[in-house]
Image 1 (cartoon, rainbow, N blue to C red):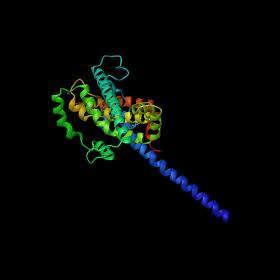
Image 2: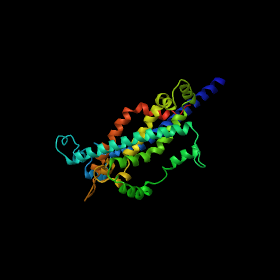
Image 3: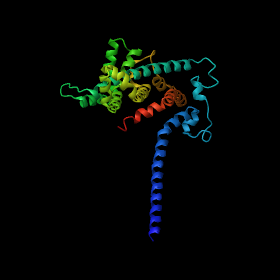
Image 4: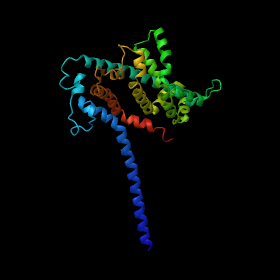
Length: 303
């Protein structure tokens, strides 16, 4: 009788375990589908014609036959790559602008943010009634402010400083935009490093800067890479300031994507093709730095 009860208990436990796994994996699969569907929709739309877009066809080779119409209009289809295309030249120009501005702003934000985060994690500051935690929250609170509030002040300031439609002006804005989130990420990274390592380095004759650059930075390098990737994504996708503070020379990809409209309405196929081409560089960067991203994101999970 006891053996029978034990078998029933074991079966119930296995059934409960399988049910739990089914629920967990079902939720994960559902969330993956919801998260990836916009990307799938964008890529599939880039291979549609106007009637397919208007009918809402989704599944390629079932609802519609893929076409290079959207890519051909941008000079990016296989048959158009060997031909001269002003649209493709403009795309490459915007792609270079986005890469230069986003990469420089992200690197500068990681450099400045790492220094600020290191100071907040190792030293005690007092600015009026504000302490370290208040200063950290002040940085984070900058993300709450809607960008439109800063539109007029930045426009007037940049006009006076002759920074409109310049690389330096947009890099400065992007750096300020992503600096708060970089500071918060790096502050948690530095908090996982024991202070004893720096004390031992100081005893061995290193200065504070020497201990920071030779001991601490190599340990938090994965976190710096993760912060850089996050800042790069935010800068790469930014549209408001790029449209406000630039005109011709330094326009970025988001501005070009938003301009895919004509007398007949929005050219969804061209916009989708341009969006897909703009996403690919970030995908390649994510694949190349995948290990560093995972290590950086999990570095602060276990102390």
